[in-house]
Amino acid sequence: MSYLKLILKNPFRKKFKSILTISIITFIIVSIIFLSSLSASGMYTIDKSITTGGDFVVRANYTLFTENEFIFINESIVQEIESIDGVEKATPFKETYPEVGGEFYVAMDVTPYTLDDTGTKLIEGKFPSKNNEILIGKDVVKFLNKGIGDSIILKNKTYIVTGIFAGNFLMDANIFMLPEALNETSNYKEDLESIKLIVVHISNGSNIENIKNSVNNLHKGKIVAISNVNETGEYKVIYGLMETTANYLSFSAIIFGGLLVFYVMLSSINSRVRELGVLKAVGWSNKQIISMIVGESMVMSFMAWVIGVIISVLLIGYMFSTYFYFDVIWDIWIFLRTLAIVIIIGIIGCLYPAYKSSKISPIEALRY
Amino acid sequence: MSDIITMNGVTKTYENGNIKAVNGVDITIKEGDFVSIIGPSGSGKSTLLNMIGALDKPDYGHIKVANQDLLEGQNLHKFRAQKIGFIFQLHNLIPTLTVRENVEIPMYSQKINSKNMTKRSLELLDYMGLKNRTDNNITKLSGGERQRVAIARALINKPSIILADEPTGSLDSENSDKVLNLLKKLHKEQDVTLIIVTHDNEVANMAERIIKVKDGKIEE
Image (cartoon, rainbow over all chains, first blue to last red; front, side, top):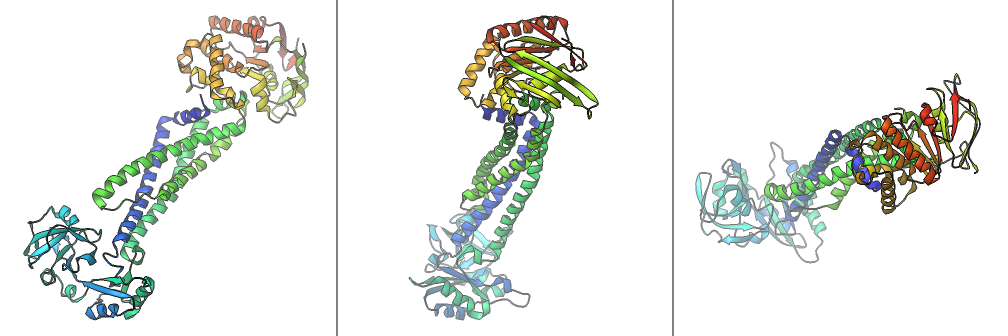
């Protein structure tokens, strides 16, 4: 029998305790991997989509919104942006938020000439030609179970779906309609008075950061140029919160998991004092006994990691595509981080038990 | 034959010197001898055996075993692994391992490869009459069979000295006879120095030489 086989057998002498410990550590590992992957995949997917069809987008700086101040972006701002050196085109979009089936959707004014600026393409059907016709994104098809030819009621008016678009994560849950049609879907007059999104294209060779700075300096920072997810407020907060939770879980895992492994290992040592005495009597050195104890601790921790990774991969693969519609990002560092966590847990858990086992007197142990 | 064990003025005390488990003992044992150490309970015979096996150190005196000065030795675990084979009264086998795995335990300290380990352990178990039980868990064996496994474990590293502390103490008479006959056979065929500690006169009389111990002193 190899030494490895001996180390693999020993942790499961106290089956219930060992399985419980492995299960708890596995659960923590799954949570950390899931949250971190959700954060990474979410950030990636949104980052890929945030500029829609342009080089960057411009929105009102929501952090400056107050009860008395609503930031309006009007046509003159669009012209100011277009006049910045290096800007080729700035396409404005208005938005309303009609309710359908108890949920609020984003409706945007889109023409055949501005569809590309949304970062999407028509994948089925045709573009609306009348004010009672709309396009819906592929996610709206799933949410409302509607298709081409079906009708959707927005603000008590019936609209016919003439086409389906797709291509941008942030847009695929929206509704597109002709500009004149959008007016009738508004709940608040402010919705239509302000442009909500400006998609900006820059000319080749232009410095995007300089142009964005120029935009940000217009109107004392009331509008903000965004080309990546870190420049957003809300998404950054949400995914930052997930990452913070994952970090907190990592720290807790080390403490809690370490204590659990410590308890199981100490319990194991105490139940085989005589056996350890025999090992010393037949010629095992303290170093060999310590390495056996450390090995057993690592077996438990590593097993929890392997099971945790397998469960995480299956869970992420299923949930991200079914519920979040994210691109799944497999970041090796997320898995390596959890591997480091279980190694630390294994070491913390076995330090004292290993020390104690090395100090056992063979004579006293044999009388135990 | 040369001396394999020499003890001069060996004393072992407990309770801050109030109890003398072994008191000024001088013993010489030659290589290949079969010796029994007999005495009543608490006479110090197991303490003597533990000191010969480098499991314990005397407070006074000098011990040399197989050319190893036990008071100056650093890595006594290596000495035990290479030179000593222990047989305990309660066999002390590991219950979660099989027969073969228990026999192989002392070999890990010698860093022998897995293939050679298996070969040697199977040879020994065949010698012990346990060829068909090698993959059985220890808990499925009788008392006599377990003690035979313990003997195989003691022999696996080809030690010079076998130390048996009451090897038949927990066996019935039939199994005791089997174990003792096996030990006698081993002594002859494997050419080891065999020292048995016992409180049983019948067992002691099987040896070529008897050392009597009482109150920590030799009454030879």
